[in-house]
Image (cartoon, rainbow, N blue to C red; front, side, top):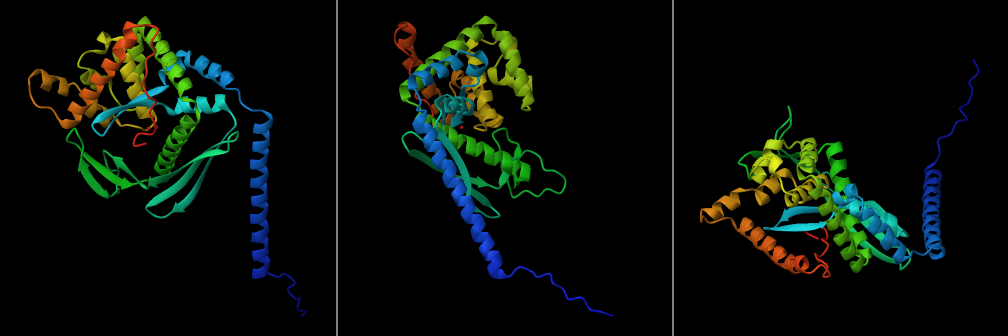
Length: 330
């Protein structure tokens, strides 16, 4: 029987190494070409701040956009109010000539570190941020076979379990942290005076819209809370009265809560603890309140005092510094 020689050869290690070097070189050249093309486009089509201002203020006149432009969350015994991720995305679209990048720079079984960068292509100014994603999440209940890494008691006296994050949980957590980092960097590029004008327009749009029918607006917000797992009775317990009796100011306040929850800046438990009616009852009875609640009350009083001159004189604009990333504030 004739023996047919095997003429198929496996590639040698030097050949594989050469192929890898060729692929990496091609990828580097492609990335360089893309970046150069972006800078060239920015040079040929520079932005107009007046056009950006007009676009942003026009967006702030849209009720649905204005309703999601701000968030409020409890942080370190106080309240942080700032611009939402959706608002920062609108700023990036209207401003143009921004390069947004993210890349994994470290990954192990416990954490993943990503570098998020926003570059202004016209000024070559880059804002880098390293984001650490811990591969755990908190759950109020354990699934069958799920093992808790750690257990703590939340503000409602219920157990909260720290468990290993699934792939979906990790992806959601990672995307939320990346979005917050991008928000922080984009807002640093936007001129401060334009942000102040946008704040005035957002507040004016929301105030006029809420004054039309506060009860109807409250129903829509209650539906949105229900979509996040918060029942209307818990919302009424937090407000201290039925939703049918809600005021325009409370509608605005609830909207900032739900924006904070959607952006991942706060949980419902955080909001219950910081904005609940229990503190008001304790103060009315002359009982001591927690340091966290006391600090929050003091901050709110300072904000009200700062806004009184605005309400007295229509020609004086209200000022509230746009929030950066909490801990920086989504």
